[in-house]
Amino acid sequence: MKKILFSSAVILVCLFVFNACNKGDEPAPAKHGNPVPTGNYLAGLGTTPGYPAGRPFVLPPHISIVSSIRGGEMYKNTEIDKKKYTGPFPFDIIPKSWVSYGTGTFVNLYITFYNSLPQPTNIIIPGGLIFIDSLDFDSNSAAVYQKGFILQDVDIPIASMDTAFVILRAYCLNHTLAPSNYNAVYFIGPITSNPDLDSIVTIMGTKQYPFGEEYNIQQIIWNVTDYGLNLTSSEVQYLNSLP
Image (cartoon, rainbow, N blue to C red; front, side):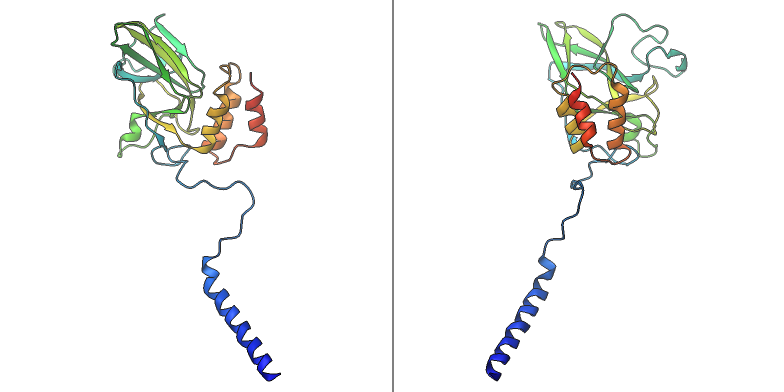
């Protein structure tokens, strides 16, 4: 009897030691709610510093951008400082040659594309592409202007060996920064890899341009970029309901 009790005690001690030694290797208990993705997917969005996460976008070799990419707000030309302005387009009247593409709210991008091919072509600006103000690249300056976010693919035709004067509509990724204006010089950034922004782009990829719904969509984007929230089921349902 004593031998049985002794053996049982030895077994219990061994089990205790084994469990204690392996406790550090056990997975952490599951948390309720949406998991936080690994990687800094909020970098450069909202008030979070840094460069936005994503994959690079490169223009086709036969497409080039003439002059700089300027920000602007339609019909608010009185805000331009004529002494400092060096943009590629007239500041008094927006000429008929400028054609608007896409949808957006607070970021308008004036871009002149040139096609070097001897035949007409099209340039696709992909949904999810981010445009970044040049001051973001200056370590001595704080961010001033909102980054522009392309919601859906934009298909722009360009005649052979000719230019296309494009006003590209974009959504805002930084609620607290200033809307684009003619003093802002933009650069092409990455195609976002933020999971929630990417979900918005995926849902909207098969939709018509959501004219009249821009501000509702902008609020959903700000919920992601400025408030660090995951898409809610009601937001997904709303986006899916758009034609």
